[in-house]
Amino acid sequence: MLSNISTPIDDELLAVHNLIKKHLTIKTGYLGTYAHLDFSSINKNIRPVLVILSSRIYGLAREKTIALAGVIQFIYMASNVHQGISENDSEYYRGNVDPKDGSQFPVLVGDYLYGKFFFFLSEAGILNLLDPLAEIICQIHEGGLLKKKLTRQVPPSKAFREVVRKETATLFAGCCSLGALLTDAAPEDRESMRCYGLNLGMAYGLLEHGIPMEHASTYLVEALNSLSSVSAGPERTLLEKLVHNLYRQGLPVRRMVI
Image (cartoon, rainbow, N blue to C red):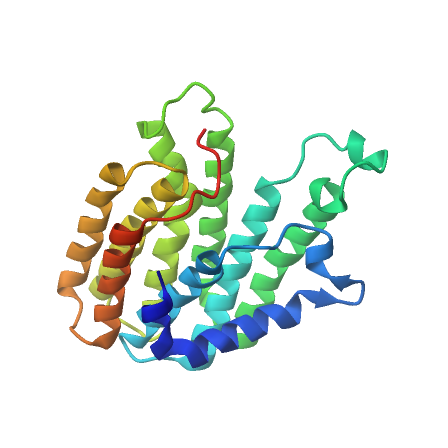
C-alpha cells in the first residue's frame, strides 16, 4: 500500500529506521528479545511517512522531521507493547512462557521506548512538542482503558469508535499536525493536516480491527476533503494517493474485534 508512496522519501525514511534500530539495541541485547517488537511493513512505515510528507509540504526541516518521526514510531511501539502485556505472570514464573509474553520485561521495554521520546525531542531541539505528544500518549492509554469495558459492545458502536479515535486516530493526527508545525506552517494549515490525519487514522483503525470498508469510507472522504485547502504539490498528491490505496486495498486484520 505504501510502495508507490514512500519512494520519493526513501532517504528520510531510511534515516528514521536507522535511528530506531540504533536505539533498540542496548548493553543487554536487542529489545525484541524481551517484548514483541515485530510489526507489519505498513505499521513500521505509515506513521513516519505521514510525518515526513506533512513536513515536506511546508518545507522539510530534515533533522527535526526525522527525530519527530522516530518519536512517533517509538510511541506507537511502546503503546503496543504495553497493550499486549499479560495480566497473569504465573506461567512465566514457572518457565512455561516466553519472556516476551510475560509482563516484567515488556513493561520495562515499553517504559524505555516512552523514555526515548523525551531524549529525541531534546536532542533535536523540539521540546515545544513535548506537551502535545504527552497528551497523545494519555489519549492512547485512555483508549486502552475504554477498550477493556467494551466486552458487550458491538463494533462499530459509538463507544468502539471512541476507542479507535484515542488509540489510533489521535496519533495519526499528531503525525500530520506536528509535522507541519516543524516548518512553521500557519495554524489553519496545521488544522487541515490534523483533520486529514484524524480521519485517515479513524479509517485505518477501523479497518485494522476488521470493520468493513463501508464504515471506514466516510472517514476517507473527509480525509480527502481536509486536503482541499492544502497547497497542491507532490506531497499532497502522495497523501491523496495514500487514501485511495487504503480504500482499494484495505488492511490485513491485526487484532481481534472486541
